[in-house]
Image 1: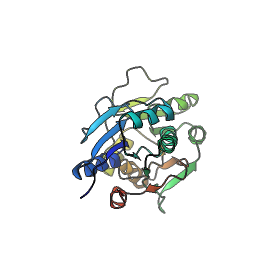
Image 2: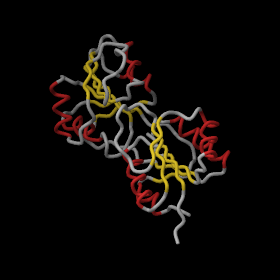
Image 3: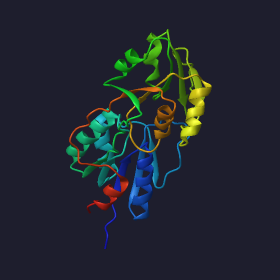
Image 4: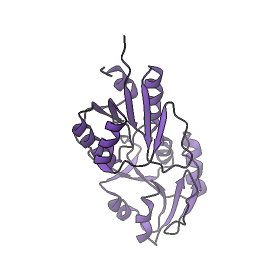
Length: 244
């Protein structure tokens, strides 16, 4: 007979949502923790928790108090701090811990990528007088304020509660999965380059295809190294190797 577990998923990604659905369907108790940046997140099976934990110590306390038996990090590949905190908290509590790390995107022959190591390097790499589409989280776009020679366009799911810290055209909505629709947005707004992070996965890849089709240069921020935690590349792989 299969034992049920009390699982905490550090989520916010499409893969985390799929994982929550799969594990609840298998009879496990699942809580998905979200950062709380989206006002109306998509509904998920199981429980949803929103907001931070207060560092590694706070996460360890939560794991103990809630009697969590397994911790899974399925956060964004660039969520360095929470991933580091998760590894520390799991070690402190002795709770089994694994990570879901979707593969990075790779450039094809027709892609015009310029790889950079940091957000600051991406700011410097934007061509002079460019019209750049910033496919970045809202907390990162302010770095481009030092480039008044350029025009910027950004997209957010929710209307920001405060004005942007610099002049940029704002498009509200989620990224489309249709490359043709993404290409229309680029063309209608006179976009001359795309700035994004190498998040990997299916979500958001349409903009990469659109840039390829339009022969637009892409300033691609390379993903950080997140340590040696045992990781799986797909939900199927993680669920198949789910040890009780």
